[in-house]
Image (cartoon, rainbow, N blue to C red; front, side, top):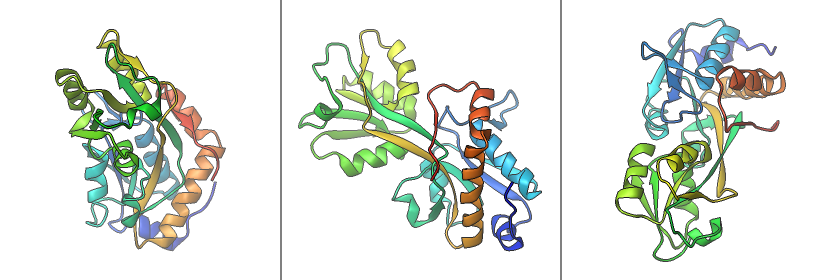
Length: 243
């Protein structure tokens, strides 16, 4: 187990405890127990980090990754678990990914679209949860299709159905659930991106960022991430390769 320097520990706990920001909109990584407290893979990784640093851990729940990222420069959290997107890297020093999640499209019944590439065409309207890592990716990469951004996956699915949009962008495990709610719909094979779920610390904490990167590599290599995925009974996650 890697050891943190005094400087790294201080940078990761300026208030004397480790404040861990969690994106509660990603049901693969986070959930709540009967009392409403955060649980799941990301929470477990945060607690393990605190255990190794011998620090009290405070789990801070955010409704979506955008809200978590927006607080990076406000001194409200020390380590965050969210998608590593270039736009967010201006304020956050990210580790390499600890897991990857495929993002693809759900199509309505009767759709003539057959491939990921065909979705990016004039006149195609795509529902997507705003400020998700894959929304940021699509905003950068789509050249012809129109994105219809909604708050949260539930609202995006409702918009997709109610307004008869051409596609719903989402993480494959979530789209499987949505497909069950819309008979005749289909999920496209392949993916338009694989969301890289990483840990990060606000900019300006170089020793803390270096330790966090080493920690993520250690929990991947040791099997801790894989065991925690199994413990939480999560399907649809792949442990990311070593950096």
